Amino acid sequence: MIRRIFFAVIAALLLTSMAHARTYKIAIVPWAGWSPANVAEAKGFWKEEGVDVKVAITPNLQQAITLLKNKVIDIKFNMIGSAVGLYMEGMPLRIIAETNWSHGGDKIIVKKELDTNAFKAKPIGVYLNKPSVTYFLNQYLSSIGIRLSETRVIEMEVDDMADHFIQGRFGIIVCYDPVTLRAVKQGNGKVVATSATYQGCIPEGMMGLEDVVKNIPQEDLLKILRGWVRAVRWSQDPANWKAYTDILNNHTFKADKPYSDGELREMVGSVRIHNPGAQLERNQNNGGLHTYLKNLKAFLIENNMLKKDFNPEKIFDNRAMVTVLEEFVKPSDDL
Image 1 (spheres, rainbow, N blue to C red):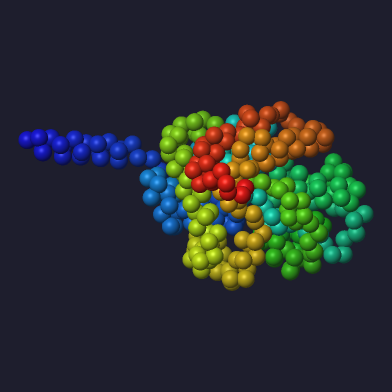
Image 2 (tube, helix red, strand yellow):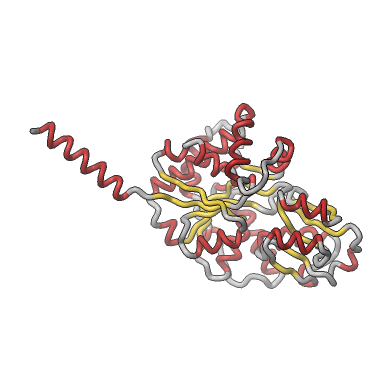
């Protein structure tokens, strides 16, 4: 009798657990910097942590933002500056963690025959008209004596923008890999600056709507972040490169033709995916991300673009990520 009751209780607990099980949905676009999310899913790291996570790959950032706004997804990877832009537009976003930064993958491409004196006359195409991209663009324009306010910036879906550049409607575009390859080859373009030129100018990471993030149980959020960190460590092990390229081609870039080993190395090399030590430095109190947010705010004020005031502590909640990273990083480790 006791044995029967015991199994009945176990069965009830299992049914209750199943009834309350939750699948978390994370959105990315095809971008090497966020590929560890595909690794975490494909290698079962999240499953091993005891959390169910599905990765949705959207063709562009605009669609991912729409999914987030409509609460179809729980978390999205995006540029941190874009989170600030969306926050100023009224979307109550919370940054969960910085995970990487673009380090050459974002490029400013100019028509070879275009003289810098004509930069103000021709519109500039950007894949996202948010502070993340305009902050990067401003770094380059300032270096050649042009103010951002003197130009006309037009946001366009990345493939359409590349087409317009090839056809001569744009003289300058801000684009990202792998679409940049087509713009340069077919559009008689030259790369004049990349995100590596201004190191750390485009940090990226995880974010979600404030109420959605608050409704994720803390233990589940820790498991999601733990799975990400494990995936980063796995993907950065040279012994896993061949398996990693399979995940890149079959998951991250599944909508494209398979890329060669050389092309994949170039795309992975154009981002700086932070190892656990670097992630801790970037995410800790008064760390690298906090400094970036203060500098971004100064840029917005200088260019009369601060639509809504913000404090880094208000929009960035680093507690869960720091808790997880402290599990991986020993005090003696180099950051």
